[in-house]
Image (cartoon, rainbow, N blue to C red; front, side):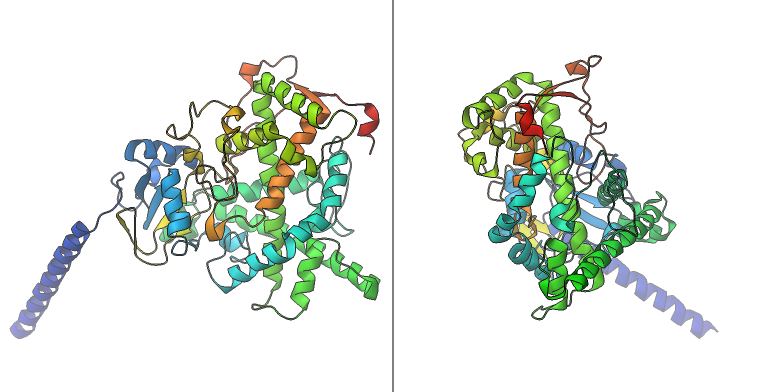
Length: 497
């Protein structure tokens, strides 16, 4: 008995010594490494207590305290926040390949069909093929040119209809009517908008279970339950879309020609030459990316642009004077006119600076240990690039809180991932592959709305009372929808559909 007790005490002493030595070793190693500055984390939750309902604003405050690169801890994950153009270039260009993957989270699992889309897919063969399909088959110059007639027709009808997804699905939704998608599923504009609103909200929330894994199944905030509900609605939507396209193809037989992007995706799935099989979930994920990115980026940016212009009516005067001088009042502005409208381009860029579609770019994750800007970054570290903070950097922008399109006149700053002070579509490998289409739609939408209408607030609303508050979500839309009074400013025959 005494011998057994002695062995037990000896074993405990040996284990204690081992733990002590390991602690010393790890402590010394950590002291040799240089990490970015940041607040001290709490046990278990880390720094999650510092994140409010609008994460980009919370992280902006931290960057003002700790600098352009802040280290945080969210639950069990190390997190970095890059809040300057220089730091954005480090992660999205200089070390792009190391940070080309995405972290796992509930939204990617449930909403995008277990990471079957391109936005949230981890770096690998599926992501490479999806991006290749987007760039070569859907968003090439030739393909975008072939769909120009759709954009033209929808812009002509923009005064009375709102185009949601005709280029993707082959259908449009009439805001003022009861358009349906197929015969099996009635889907009004309001229903589709509710689905998209929920999609972007749930993709942008800070779900505690994503950061503290052992709380995942408790779903304390109820987000996972909402994601599962949303997925059921998305399944019904996609099933109807694909069934209708397959039925049309079968009816036309040899006379069938692809009319929209879903037709193209289905053809690719059935044909040879793919490196990775396009599963049904992959088709759902890719289609969802097309619809979500093609609608939300345009709608949010256009609404913020018109909101800012209504608050500054003198800017509307300058914009319409340019439109009247270059286009006149006897025809609609067209895509080919955009390069001759520098003030319109400045309005678009200023809107994207002050109200970026993604205030925090979708997170990147380090695939290996590395050193960035003199700091040691560990494998598995998650990185957020704050375009919202970059757009408010006083070293880059004079009076950054002011809406001043003139700041872009005569400056060679683009939105295509080369100017790191303005990154509405991101940069590097994970840059939005649809940025060309998105930019066209935003430019043409704002141009048509300014050319077509005089804008003012309702009689009982003063300009200073127009709220510019943001709502939670990955795109930070207006908290309260814009309500405005419009009147035609062109000859009435141009408004006929």
